[in-house]
Length: 161
Image (cartoon, rainbow, N blue to C red):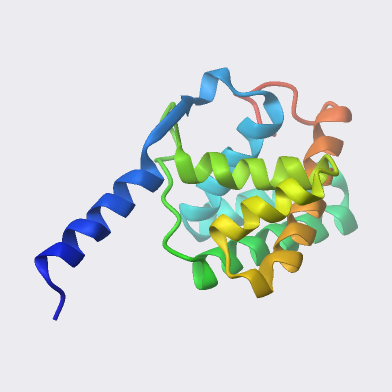
């Protein structure tokens, strides 16, 4: 049986991970896209299927599927083995939560070759023995998102396909 203090601590952790740290409208396109993908992933199978379809259409069959699988694996790792539950805001919310920002920064740092930063961020989310795999997946995802933006497949925060 959990004590009242344990329940208060759990509620505090929940609030901290979801605490607003920014606004979607102020993010650069890469960070906006990463958080949008995360939110869509969390909203169920139909939006996951839509995300996969968009990646395949815009990146080609091989890279699109690889990117989707990397994103799927990263999310499954974080939601299964994460230090605590990752908190996210609703898909249409303009706030950026602390956990969402951390997730986006992991991918951005990894894909921009800031390996030490990416490892540190991964340690906030995951146990140490999963850090290398977490960073490797994050780098693949971030590189593909850069390709989407560079090839003008995503040219607006409000038009992700």
